[in-house]
Length: 225
Ligand code: URA
Image (cartoon, rainbow, N blue to C red; front, side, top):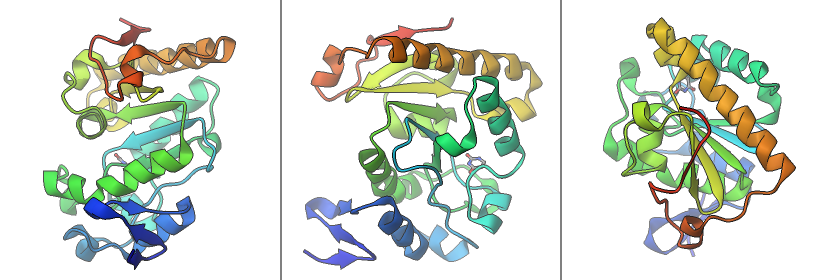
């Protein structure tokens, strides 16, 4: 099997990495799409290997591109504040993005870029095995739960896929541009807290939809709204 920057290329072009460090190195060397030539720094993601929660945003912005860390700009400050509001710190969650490199001018990710980056996010989730994945915004929703409703319809709900709870929420940047979304965003984070508390009290049974390996739009645990 051919090796690529610490990982193995498996059949079908899937890449398998032994750990997050090897994956991060591969991301720093990555040229799977044109963003590999325009970025300053790749941004694989940060956080503990055994994080209970993985947060998935859209793509690095200018500050993230300069610093090589996700969510260090204005949206990141709001994210930190929202996490603190539900008793979590940035240090205990793993934060990453659909795209590991900044699209020029912060434009939306192109489908081919999301596809090129997909093995990295898939492998991060496979290595960390989080209990909960927070999906920030519509691009992360389309990538992680394709076929689900728009973010405006599913935010704050708990959706199960392969025994993992996925909770879509508005992207913090959306609330910075549209202040009327701030309260909704805070309520969605409260829904996350409610889910975590409930899961701590009684381990969630594996939903039928998970056993089939897919998401069932009907299998939603509505904690808010
Ligand atoms: N917005 C994102 O989606 N990700 C970042 O890392 C920063 C801003």
